[in-house]
Length: 113
Length: 111
Image (tube, chains in turn brown, orange):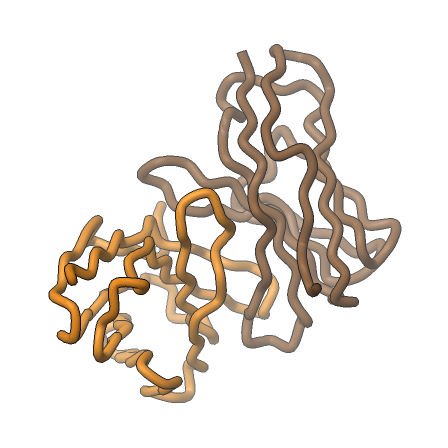
């Protein structure tokens, strides 16, 4: 089944404790991206990757890191999480054909206390 | 500053009638516009897109209209069905890499 998987689905952590949210896709997509969804703000793009070893900042990259060492994986790293990073996070992948179609994962709900 | 805006947080429509969801944008450089549908506890799913060189795209019950001069797009769902009840996000892209989403409109289709 074609899908984007994210782990963990739920995470509660404390300020400053480094964490990684994994994202994997099995569709051989070149394009991958991370978003956060917050009430009243919709989805905002954090980082995206056009291919292996090629990443770039989205609209709200501060406090996040990403890497793309393999085509199928695109982990999101929070080196020192803060309460304002409490949010619902979505990973997405797409064929990169220019029309913007993306397939989203189920989401990771992160709470930073 | 929100580059893509959905000014109606919610919309209720009778089953069988037309649902019209609206979206406005500010950046004239956007070259693709998309609609996504989202159910609770799931990720958004792609619905339909339109290139900036077109003014209409249709896929079954879903039609997207683009008015570039007004920087406005709309999604028409005809006929509306109870299973269409979800949150609909409008999105815009340039370069096919950077995406900007609206805040969503919650559609309720009443049986």
